[in-house]
Length: 133
Picture (spheres, rainbow, N blue to C red):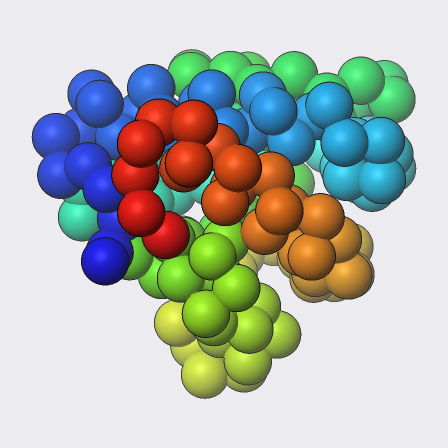
């Protein structure tokens, strides 16, 4: 199964709720907060954009860009799903060009160490929604 939604509005609601849940994982929240910048996340097919604003030690998810992006990641919704179900390795996806980074992405790439925690949250989230991984 690929990403569960093709409708951009449903996909956006699904993604934003998932990212909010990730903020509840201390290891992930601390890692994001340490970046201290605006990170643009640009999902394709369906097209969904959101921003994670980590300036000032807080982590705020925004639907509109709060300021220029310090870094951004562009990837397909299906790749997002593969990463967060544990079927794709994030570092390999970067190396193979499946994720298109821009800006100061070194810190973001270091956050791949938190992927096991994020995969657990995503799988539980899918199960709660009645969706198969």
